[in-house]
Amino acid sequence: ANVNIDGGNGNLFANNHAEWLTALEQVYNNSKHFREVGIQNRTRVINHYSIEANYGKYLDIFDIF
Image (cartoon, rainbow, N blue to C red; front, side):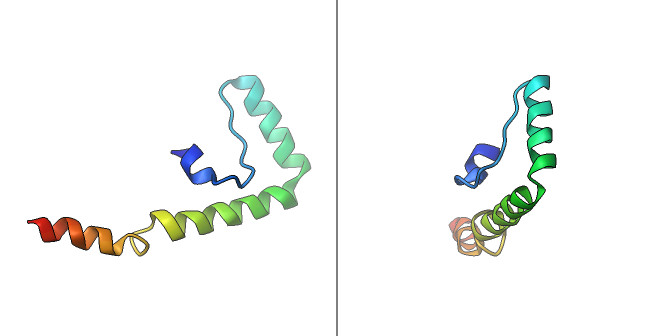
C-alpha cells in the first residue's frame, strides 16, 4: 500500500535493518525535504483514499443492495 501512496513523492522504503538505518539518517539530515514529502503524502491520501474522496463509490456500493 505504501508504494501506491508514494506517487513519486520521494518517499523512502526499507526492507531490512541496514536500509532502515540509512533511511532514518537521510530523514535526519534532510528534515525540511522530508517534512514536505510528508505534507505531499497527506494531501495524496486525503485526495485519493479518504472517505470524502470516495463518497460516490460508497454510495454506488450501497445502491447495489
